[in-house]
Image 1 (spheres, rainbow, N blue to C red):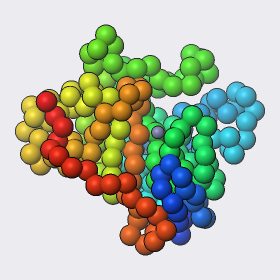
Image 2 (cartoon, protein in one colour; image 1 turned 90 degrees about the horizontal axis):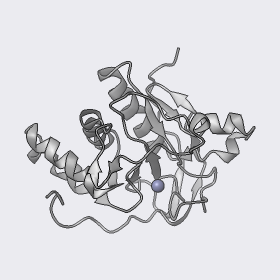
Image 3 (tube, rainbow, N blue to C red; image 1 turned 90 degrees about the vertical axis):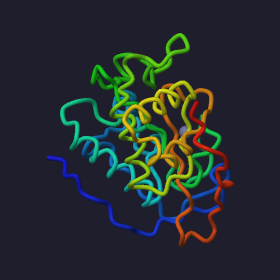
Image 4 (cartoon, rainbow, N blue to C red; image 1 turned 135 degrees about the vertical axis):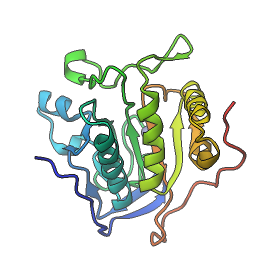
Length: 230
Ligand SMILES: [Zn+2]
């Protein structure tokens, strides 16, 4: 049985900046836990790769945010697909193939919750990542608005989120959903943190602020402007 336990603070220290940094005493995210699984786990077994290959390393605030947010959504929506976790950082940080950042243990890529509740299977589909949630310029009917909106709020509840990179089409749908639910005004900061970046229609990229005690860690400039909703 997997316990929904919290991770207590250790001493992982992010240094430098997101795109040029390292991690001292990094912490691994267990490959699966309550309400989530690492998407590359099956791939790893299939190819006989070791854990070093999978970028599962981060800092305590990042690991605990992922575990707490996934467990929270799972408790409220049991029985559907789990949160799909993709790359965090390499064991000691630094360059990660296929990413400009993910260097100092404060970045993670996460998949979207799906209406059909089917978890992406990288081996069966021979596709490392889940399909895009933007189809013909529109948000896919398989994009689970309710749970993905709850996920955005949960990430902010459990982490000191600096930015969440996401395709604008999906952001617009979340804005509309928040307004329809009467949750727009109370969640302006959540919506403001959602920033359009191309190639983020099949996953989000969550970036945390430097923890207060991480004196050698450099934050990205503060966000300015409004919610960025239409
Ligand atoms: Zn990323």
